[in-house]
View 1 (spheres, rainbow, N blue to C red):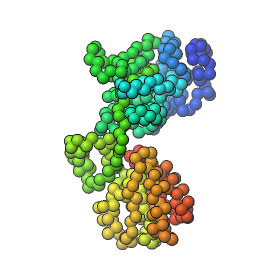
View 2 (tube, rainbow, N blue to C red):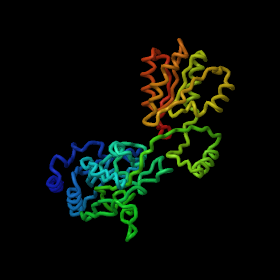
View 3 (spheres, rainbow, N blue to C red):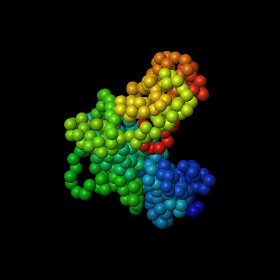
View 4 (cartoon, rainbow, N blue to C red):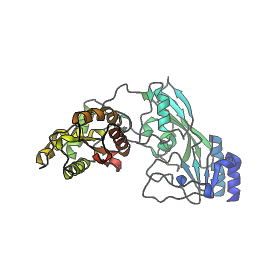
Amino acid sequence: MGDLRDRLAEVVGAEHVLVGDAISPDYSHDECLSVPPQAPTAVVRPACTAEVAAVVRIAAEQGVGVTARGSATGMSGACIPDPAGIVVSFERMARILEIDVANHAAVVQPGVTLDRLDEATAAHGLIYPVFPGESSASLGGNVATNAGGMRAVKYGVTRHHVLGLEAVLASGDVIRTGGKVVKSSTGVDLTQLLVGSEGTLALITEVTVKLHPRLAHRATILAPFATVDAVAAAVPVLIGDGVGPMICVAGGSGLAPILSLLQDAANRKVRRDCILLFGARGLCDLYAAEELAAIRNSWTASFDYWPVLSEEKADGYRQGFVTDFIPTALESLGSGAHGYMCGPPPMIDAGVSKLVQAGLALDDIHYDKFTDASTKA
């Protein structure tokens, strides 16, 4: 162990070789819930491709396994290390090397996160469109796992946007594949072979990705469907009409949070004309037309007044409508108002804060926070 640590320190510096208690528990896992965390023998933080190659050569000479690590936002357990191996963390290799506006391409190191790349490309009216659901995910990890996400219906997955790679093989040799060109039909497509290989073939040290013009306008449409089959039948019709949606989502949360809140209101004998009901992603708007109306008509303690918030912002957790509409809604309800909310924790926290600022007592604020992945914004 001492010899391995000393040799690695010669390459990356002693402060960038972590062993024993110096290894944070964060290096032992990703976001996977079904695979137990495991601490590696050492964590190495290289700063360039040459250092990665040297580390891999040392590991090969000593028969030590290597696990690559980006931001560890994946949910497959891909970066959980071998206890007898080392982790190569790309946190120091996080530079955007080039934004090529003319060729609509970006060249980045593997530790660059999606949010940083998005900020850099936005300044040029461009976008890297793949979004697997976590903006802190790294490009290297996205390439290694061929990450997809809900935008795949319009833009495809990671492999459809990778033009070229620099990678370190298990021998420590460095290779380059592809480049800033759309068409390259000569020989084996090593770029696509490496995408999705999850570190089994090589460690990715540089990525060239394709960029697209950033959409100037976006709109969100919420449509209620009676059955899952009806949703499935609508998707090919929508795409076939040439609309080209960025995201198609079938909500899985249903009416459970709303029903829970309304039952709570009935139990509290809250006056039906004093209810402020709203939900994330327009949940109330989504169901108000048919299902909420049916529930309202069937309940013995039916509610005549249903102020629902139909506006939402395109980004983040849609907290904009919390800020924009709560004061107006409370003013229309007057004294004795009760706030009922359902949504992800950030939206709920913002909503509670706004309701309190508007003069509503904490005891009159009731909510249901989403905790499952299907209801995240």
